[in-house]
Length: 341
Ligand code: IPM
Ligand code: MN
Image (cartoon, rainbow, N blue to C red; front, side):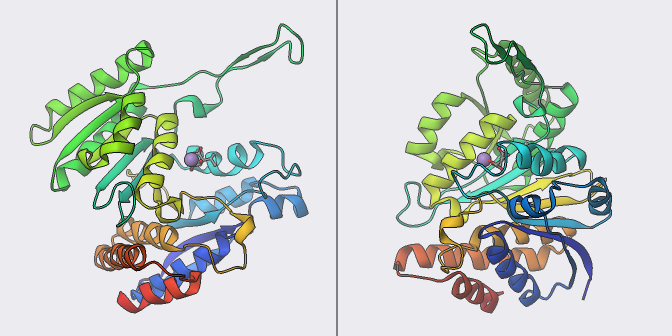
């Protein structure tokens, strides 16, 4: 038993349910974890008034990895101010831990809009419009002003693009597509395009393409098979990965790794989906995204063999479930993956 120290943030809604299945599969794969549970999220905020205390953040810096289920109040609830948990917890962890790549792999299942596809989105995860640049003036007056700038640094863009090329170099098709909006966002687009071209020159084995984000959304919906690795900025990546999830079999299959590839601290692994309070306790939550995220965690920790077995089991089972249909409970899916690893 290796005994990696993993902070588990089950969070809200179906978060704890899917995380439990992910941990079950990790154990079945033979990797020993020392887990530490952290009560964080909407429910915790409502009972304690805390979002992410500094002391907890400091503890999290010391673990080997973080596994997160989902955070957020029920849709429509007004108890938690919009953005409080996003900015104060999720984005804070991404920024503070320098999780500069958000890696989101997609494999289209039978019957989806993009069956048989196999691509990954490398989303820049610490910059762009997410940084909180800007502000409001004369709020609530007819002359109100709001600005929210997109911050792009050479350092941030380059390290993200380098990761994408490194990933593509290991994949069969060895291709990277930059997605941006260089025809309108001429300042940040120029920085992304030049950096992309320079890194591409160091990787003659990797073929490259460029698409504007609006065109890329058409291709994702109509011809996602053209993609191998997509690299893009934080906001485009957020939107495109929901679309990618939708066309490949649903957001219940979409896994993600918030990576600090430099390994100066822990990385964080979470399914792309939210807390889905409407299906809590019904057994309808699909744990495959959480399980695949946990596989990405093992891969990052160096448990590449166990990670590969888990990913293979997830991909096989999600194809089988999609092809055969029928009702699979959260637990039944977790058990079935656990049996195969
Ligand atoms: C995601 C989510 C987050 C994001 C939200 C919850 C802040 O949508 O991980 O894709 O926008 O990055
Ligand atoms: Mn999102």
